[in-house]
Image (tube, rainbow, N blue to C red):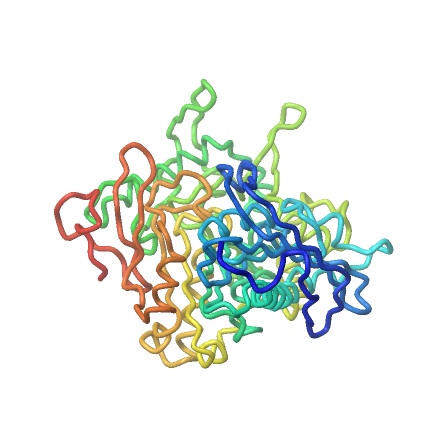
Length: 503
């Protein structure tokens, strides 16, 4: 084992502006295993030899207690530091991301932001006992924890190894992608490279837009079953799959797919052993879900899902007392009840089109300054020499890919056009891939976007494309191209990446 600068048990409390360190404890763990957790860590990570450091801090006046976990390889450190993002209403996944990151040789950090680890519900921290919003907790979750974790992680790394990291990276998807943009916009000097997957930017707008399918179903009094919705997804793919010259079950460019849901009206589809006839009301629901929310005068409020994306996450339903009704996704459900309505018992089924329009306005007005991450001015990050690699699945069923495209366009308009922006920020759109590639996607999933980012930062080789693999027995390799390019089939084996070029 290489000689270390300090013992794990005798590290000094770092000095963090605006925070006070309550405690710091380091423990050596040999042959340690992080157990698998379904939906978060598919396989256990074993054989870890680490210095595990827990730092607890508070912000004066906030009455909070924030945990930052820093793990350091006892052997074979690669000289780099990586901070990891969270998921849902958790600011960090703690051991579940620390384990895989350590396995790759990084020193790593993750934080609970003082709100604990419950990705699916903010019930424990959103509101104070008097029913008011706990703004300090929301600030921690939104941005302050990103700053504190990075400073603590890098300082502990420097103490332990006797040298600061050669390079520092951020890696996150969804909530972690939003936190990535917090770093790029608010704290542009923290990281040399930032990997932002399916970023939950435009939070105050897009989360309200996630409620749109539920409002549509309530207003139309039509609650399609999952298999009915699947019929529309399958029909869209069947109609637009071949537009790129390759029949692979994937819509390569949803922008040119002019799918009309009304074409399915009258079709009989098998559902749970019986044939169901697609009605005009069902087609109308799907059309509006794909269209996205609009205001009372017909103006667009946000984007809809892309044709080919799964519809039953946001247009989710459940059967109660023998009757099918809406069942909102937990992120928009909690945001509306706890932060906008400030009432955990708020009845979302009472939201009509005009009410939702008011919720858009209220959400933006009250919280964009705290949790908004759509500032297109990345000049600070550009000046610091940082590189930003962003990717998003075009079949994302939760966070609307067109919002990510809109952000990239705004950056281009502000910062001198596509060519100049590509020098430090590249966006890759993955056809047929769902949210953070969370389930077996039809499309090709980036195999190692972090490696591409590291190569860009350390070897000055900007990624011309991302290597990608199709899951399943059929398999196949592809490339994912930097926006606005798309992968174009040029002939040959459709399972070979060499059969495609960016154009």
